[in-house]
Amino acid sequence: MARRTGVGPDATAALAEAVFAHVDEVTATALQGHRRPVEAGDDRAGHRRRLLGLLAAGAPGPRLVAAAELAQWRLPATVAFALLAPGEDLAGARLGLPADVLCDLRPPYPCILLPDPAELRNDGRVRRLLGRPGAVIGPVVPVGSAGDSLRWARTVRDRLADPHGQPVECDTRLPDLLLWADEPLVHLVAGRRLAPLEALTAKQAARVASTLLATLQTRGGAPDVAARLGIHPQTARKRLRRVHELFGPALHDPDARFELEVALRGRLRAADGPA
Image: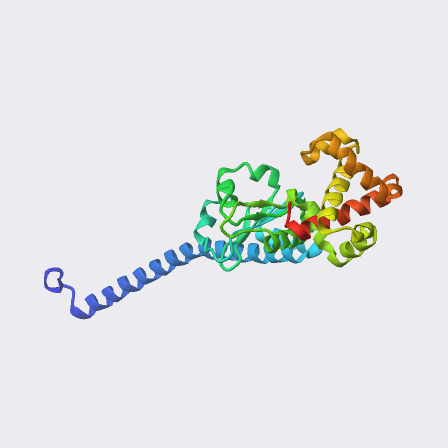
């Protein structure tokens, strides 16, 4: 090349060095421009993970507002936590979820948080994820109570959920959650209110308890109780007479009726498992 152009070797070497330096500079600039969006995305992902942790921990409002601004996430009115089957690695599912869904899909306890659940539950991508075996969907709560939704979902998962079974909706298990909130207190109420059953045989006590619960949950007439229990109305009348012999005064006291139903529900769940 030097012979054809009349340029000496030293000049050629200097020109080559200048060209290579220019190429290096252009490449570095291009790489820097390429990295900025990625780093910004990484930062947002990190902020969203921290926000999810704050929501789970029940952080106070001002901290949530500040964290949501950093995460570029609009604070919704209501949220619901959902737990997915323990041990599943669902990291790839993140790409298929709506952008507003917060999630930590790493094992061993993958979970997501749905903002404005009534709207997002209609999204096909969300439905598919929550329809997986072992999923537990926490109750819908105000955003400041997100930690409660997570706590109740964990309780239901530990008590009821089958990792290979149908998804469980916590909103349909609120009575169970109430009974589990303070089991010693439920046992205390049961011991006091259901004391008349102690003198009966196990079979008699079970029959009277089911009739008493049906009485509390219906209008209390023989036809209603019979329909509730699937027995003949005449059989229901005989059982009702026994119920009134044992619990008559309490059946006319609203507070006593409430305590009786709590006690009976706790007793039946302890004997037979969740209804």
